[in-house]
Length: 237
Image (cartoon, rainbow, N blue to C red; front, side, top):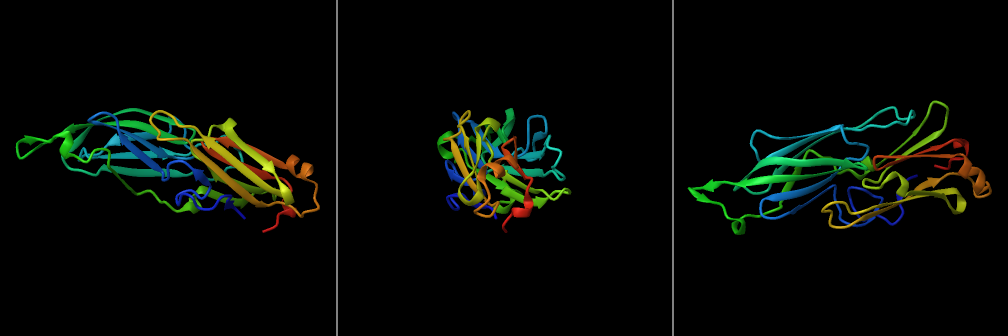
């Protein structure tokens, strides 16, 4: 059983407990530049492409999840389309796309258009408004549970933005594994984010906690924590 330890603070990720909600955040930087942050858990630099569409009012993002964990049998693909929510500007350039800990950050430069021969002014525009398409917001995407060929239990928890050294995993009372992570604010992020998850009940209450901790393998990369439980015979559904 997987639950967000503090309940559903954000509908796109049941484990988030604080910070800006949603997979995308955007804000104006100056008059004609937009900063955008979008979560792509499992993706690293070099496995994402960002292009301006033919209308010059949209950005197409394609990305492939990567993992060095030999237990990962299937990897996710992302395809996201973001469009300007106003009509008097077009996109001129995409600057400095960077992926860190499963989060893409970039800058979109826009150029005002002439409307009926009159240049669009910044005061008349709705700056910073972006419309996100083609991205499934199902919170079930934020985790995965399965059984490996050797019978071990496998858990994946998405906590985008959390550096691999900022995850904590603890076997707590009655054998529940608590996973927490802190995603610091980077670049123009409005604030940091925190995550907390209870990864089910892993044993009967009488089983020694220290033994369970030895049976728990942890793999953190690209804003994703993967757990391998080597004693699945004691897993309580």
